[in-house]
Length: 494
Image (cartoon, rainbow, N blue to C red):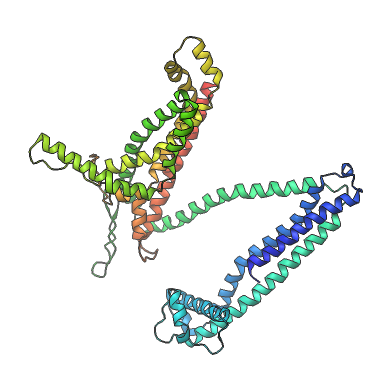
């Protein structure tokens, strides 16, 4: 029985238990629910929880552990000559066995005989899965694949029996515990509280897992490349080693990438902050309800456009426009002048990224400004201040902590952008202060270092984890500083 069918059966049992629990609680007090400790729905929920949660938990653990156990058992029965090979070749053989097992399942699902099948018979099916086997393969592969399918079917059958039996046991035990004095509400709400704690912990554990996964690979990278060469190097040239020069490890200077990241983000903020902040002030303090109801959704539509579309816009429209415009200006200043703005440049990427960030600045700032108490506006206007003076001397100082935090969060978003930079700023790692020339960012190089069929055993690929960890700490520092600014100015204002 498939996992989805098992879950469906368990949920159906839980729903039945809910109705049984409600009916049971009412029958215990002859319909006078005031004599119950909790509402009848809590008694039904109590049975539902015991019938569903333990069973689904066991099903999830079983579904994770069973494939690992089956693979280890099948791998342990492979011929001795397979274990004499390198680990990569062993993994390849095991992947082929898994593909053959899926092919045998496909034949069984199509009611085609699979007892005397050979690898030659399975090659068309394996080709559809993207698996190519040279020659006729190995005879042990069919045997191992059949063993894997047999163990998998046995595991699925045992899983169905155990999970459904556990659901029935929970159903019966919960039903037997129902009395008028049972604190069903407390127990159910305790389960809900535990679920909320687990859900809240997932984000923290995910962050910790990401950090440790990057940290382990980064440690491997720094065992090959000194930290000083990475953090203080001014040249980025991660040449891949070759047969003629196996020591050509290249140079992994972070400074050109970090400079490009901060430079492009700075240009983007120069575009996004004034436009976004002024539009937020206008919509919050000057625009009428009708105009606001139309303008704000239209402005926030920009936030829903995929970044790759912004990249195309920069590559096809903005970049060529700036290049042709600079050529015309150069021609006016000096006859026959050439373009001084390249189509792929810091200015192009920063300008388009700034357009993308406008709704972030505008929406966050608008929400913060509208939260300023109306009594402050009325008091300022009542004392004779104009609306502009009220905005400058009352509204903005009161909203300053939130606005600063919003801008720092927007800067974090700009630093982590990839697609716009790839298409609008290029991939050249260089140090320059000229915004009309191309530069690149940390995120672009992470993508380029991990593109292709690579193994994570060389500095050229492991450097991507060092770059990722560096970018993580930069954005984390910005977020922490944003919280610090918000709390500091809020305390001064209060």
